[in-house]
Length: 585
Image (cartoon, rainbow, N blue to C red; front, side):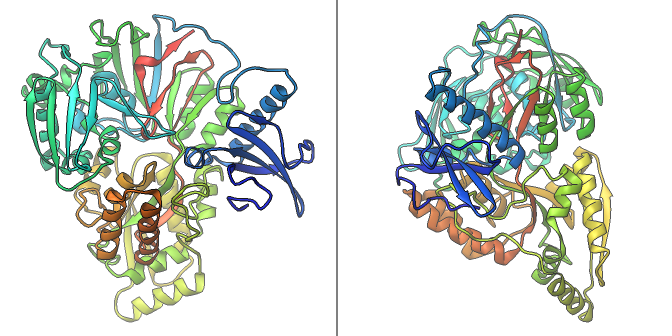
């Protein structure tokens, strides 16, 4: 990969993206410039490279994480636009559509596909990521706040402020006045406190317990203000909040009626209300006429269905049996784009990995973890799972990130892997484990691919236990697994890395317990400058390589694909669409 800063490049410009370039476009090293962007071409051995340059290093660090094929399309489009602008042939800004779709149109129905069936409509049972039920949660409960996926700035919705004056130890949440749930009860500071407190209850089995338990205490100041004290200082806590069910507030009155009654009539203050939930089939939603942000939502109805199979999702989109789908498979995004459909992708670092549970044998021995990691060909897994379209993480941060250091996450060494398998077997500890899988096509194929690869080695055995989404989630929460897919999907690094790997985190599924790692994560959380944070996260990367939490196999692709007549698709956090903004026309 080309170096981030080229010797011929003005230091004020940074390489945002690059790709191989067929010998059809010769702009010269200093290509045309438009706003914050510039194109450049460099001749290298065997061909040419096209660079998209940007003036802001931090802004662009998160805009280059696309598959090579999608990157070719993106840079090609920008190249054409810049060329036209330079020649006076176009006037549209980069990153915007050259077609004016006009004002939002009221009315209509949109059919949405999600990848995971909810076990309940209680917000504690929903997860706000592309791989779960983000559209459903946003539709029923609305949002307190969202983040800009490029700058990480917080944008307020039902909240008007969430700020700290002491470095992140205490925060004050301020709400818009006069908010009400659809049952007529107030959405006030007391309601938020009720929701946030109950998320700490382990009996609920909420994935958001990871974020909720960072809150030590909360105090209602008045109807629109809640004072929150964290367990420890965290100036980045808002990033954790928006990615969780802390962002979805339900009526305490309705929740107190019990789970069955709530699932029949879930009460929030979101843009839509429930008409009917047919389990394992569809969720029918109708516009909330009393939504606080009128005239939104623009749609009259939403229909949400769960489709775990990636082939079925893309077929539903291209045959127009569905209008928008949350997506996790880059091959589907590429297919959709090739068929003339639209997509939105949240750029990320880190990724998903096959987590190895260090709390029990065989992976309580680092040699077993390292042997499995050394044995696996992740490129081959990418081919069979994602048709080679996803990116296998080579480093924790992408080049261009202010936190990037060339520390390789993992490597393959078949001979060393077999030596370790033999060594463990000689000690009476042959490596035998079970891979617990989620019901998605990708997860099952991944497990089968891993099983097939390890079958080529002696003294290692892999079994597969396929569960439904609720069962796999429960097993992960109970830490009752040998291997399971999990992740540390990075926007700002604090939340995903601290949550996934700190010994005191309830989101530390694999059981990491490394004092050096803990110190580095704590330092990165409270550091004042990017350089201080980078130094801390350099140590984090070194410790992850040493401790081997799992096998990194894919850079996450939080995304949506949707039809050409669908507009207003906006994502926040890890691929969470805002249904109130969507319209068709």
